[in-house]
Every structure is written in structure tokens, then in C-alpha cells.
Length: 159
Image (tube, rainbow, N blue to C red):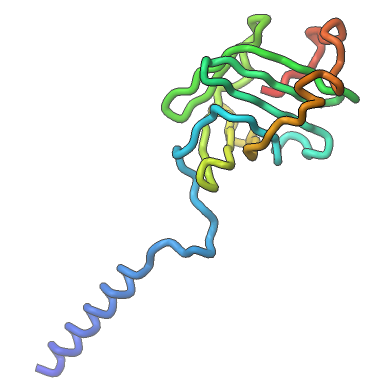
């Protein structure tokens, strides 16, 4: 009888410890699909280049259009526009001149939708992290941008 009682108490203890093994408040927040791309974003980390060498702001509008303000390998920002599609966690797009983005991206969100991660669907090593932000007025208004005439096909496109 004592053996059965001990086994039953051990089983209850194991079940109790397993049931209490929920997510720790101190651990990292797992990525989710709970968020929206429709917002203004700033690149905070990119696997291909240190963010000290790359400054990128992106705005995705409700109407399926985007604005991209990037400073990659240039002293000034370049403003690019186009359209995007976001469906079932996948983001793709085309620039206004008809050039498709270099990848379709798998999208995940963290921090209650304030953080977004884009991972190239065909190259899991190409990862870009963004935080929601307000794009500075001087960038949107073009004060820190190159003239449209200076934008050529040779411009490196971030997306």
C-alpha cells in the first residue's frame, strides 16, 4: 500500500511540475504572426551588412504601396517606391520601375508587433530586423536625399 501511495505522489508531482513549466517571463518572446506590416519601420539589424553601414526606413501603406528610404553605399538617402503584397506571413514586392524585390520574405513579429523580422524565403541567412518608428521628416521631405536624377539602375536596392 505504501508503494502505491508513493508512486501516486510521485506521479502527481511530475504532472504538477510539467504543468507549471509554462513560458518564462524572463526568456525571449517567440516570433509570431501577430502584427502588421502597415507601419513605418527602421532597420535595426541586417545579416548582410552592419547597420552602421546601412540605414533603411520603410513604410508600408494600407493601399499596398511602399516607400523605402535607404542609405547603402552612398552618402545620401535614396527614395524608392513601389507596391507590395502581404499574405499568410509572406511579403513580396515590385519597385515602381517594374523591378521585383530580390526575395520573397517570411515575416514574423515580436514585442507585441513592434518588432518585425524579414527572412528571405529562399535564403534563411538573409535576415533583416526592424522596429516600428516615425521616419524623420528631413528624410521623407528629401533634405537628406539624392536627387531623382542621380538614382540610376546602379543603385543597390535593399529589398
